[in-house]
Image 1 (cartoon, helix red, strand yellow):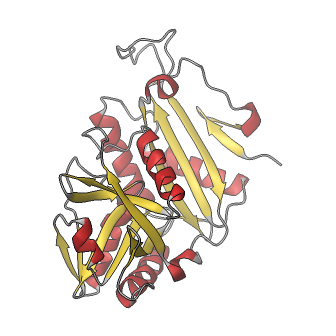
Image 2 (tube, one colour):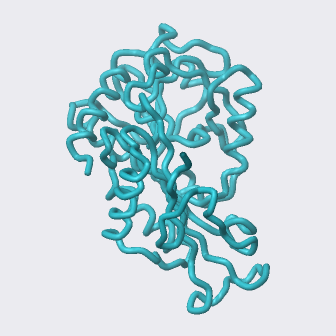
Amino acid sequence: MSRTVYLNGAYVPEEDAKISIFDRGFLMADGVYEVTSVIDGKLIDFDGHTTRLDRSLRELDMENPISRDDLLEAHRELVRLNAIDEGLVYLQITRGAPNDRDFVFPDPDETPQTIVMFTQNKPGLADNPTAKKGIKIISIEDIRWGRRDIKTVQLLYPSMGKMMAKKQGADDAWMVEDGAVTEGTSNNAYIVKDRKIITRALSNDILHGITRAAVLRFAQEAQMEVIERDFTIAEAQEADEAFITSASTFVMPVVEIDSQPLGTGIPGPLVTRLREIYLEESLKRAI
């Protein structure tokens, strides 16, 4: 049985969902996306994702073609139609498909935007066994464009980074620019030293992670100290603990950086507790 997906207001079997070859998301990566996790059939941090979606669209001079209420209804309907208990809802909005390829933006009054949504079934998302053993990362040069704060569909270099990690027997990569870690290929990066959580401050250099915002808020509510500043790979290798956050991994411990074990080589107590807190608090707020 195929998935039901959402395409421009209609719910259709995935094999029947088609877009134009002239869609600017396909030709120009001219689009933005969001991924919302589902646990117990409920959406995690939906409002955070819709707020960031609005910002990303504004930064690319695009309108939001769907209201918050209609977007919520569509997410819930896809979860229902595809019987998702634990998984993800992927949303993508592009500038649409003009009649031909052109670098100049099409007239929005003449070219409707494209809206695509689909689900991914991920049983065990919350109780991920990887969180009990941690992940290994490598460091790579950050050569992406300068507006990483916009969640665009330009994901080639992050994909290349994940492949670099895979070839070295690691799970993911942290990107480094001017000597400091920016972020992971699809996640925000953190280290822990003397029970202090250290992570890069928000700017155009990194994605303004929705999970990041929630995790830091929950950490502070739990009396954990948070410091927003740059850190290096060498500093990370000397840290007590490290972790990443994203909508699909939540809080994930890092146990090795560039082949050097971190701390005791197993997930530490602070990160383990932070993951528990995030899941507990997020489920309370899920819709």
